[in-house]
Image 1 (cartoon, rainbow, N blue to C red):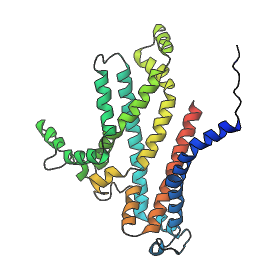
Image 2 (cartoon, rainbow, N blue to C red; image 1 turned 45 degrees about the vertical axis):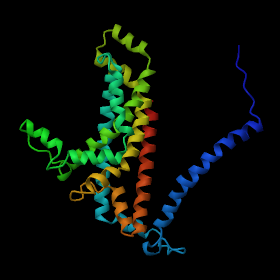
Image 3 (tube, rainbow, N blue to C red; image 1 turned 45 degrees about the horizontal axis):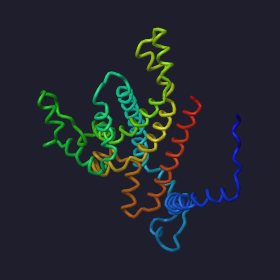
Image 4 (cartoon, rainbow, N blue to C red; image 1 turned 135 degrees about the horizontal axis):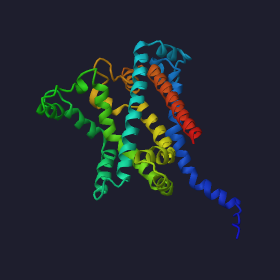
Length: 296
């Protein structure tokens, strides 16, 4: 018995467009148009950017930005933090998902799943305020706990040497549950027969996970990888709440630096930075997707 193809009539095509049009308009108005407007502002002189007839200066703002040593340090810090955060979040989420999917944890899996996902739906502002209190050098719970065991205090967000680690941990707490959910969904549809066959052939637990299960998780790795790169390149809220770009500019990421310039009325340079960051995010996301697709 062969399946018959259903002819697509003009009426059905118009029904599709009728449903898609509202979402397309929302995407254009609130998604694409602000990007175009931001790029336009980046070509204008800051003092005239908000006037009805702004003065256009071409790529002068981009030249100014690319020769700004503070921006270059900011860009380097952003790329370094993104690489570290993506690696840490995906590694932790993958290990946690595999642990939940295994038979090691019996009753209580639901509790661990909910506990891991709750930070994702917690307002990030409230969560990061709590983390700032935890890292406080005077009354923070982190140093109080370390003191119980006679360990040296943790610099947290007060020290340039530890601030990256401090905000990375806070963001891992907030975001990792989302990546765990994606990995668990992929693990649920993995072919268990392949793992059972490998077990019969004498493969150890670690060999089965690394050589049989992990290759089947490539779709989830691609999705999580692309999303994580986009997420951490745009890191902003945690910096505003916890560090304000400090100490000593250690967390003055591109998004925060552009925000601080915009707050100073330097609209042309700020939007130029935002445009550069947008292009980097788009390029890195596309590159990660292409690498993942080729690996498949």
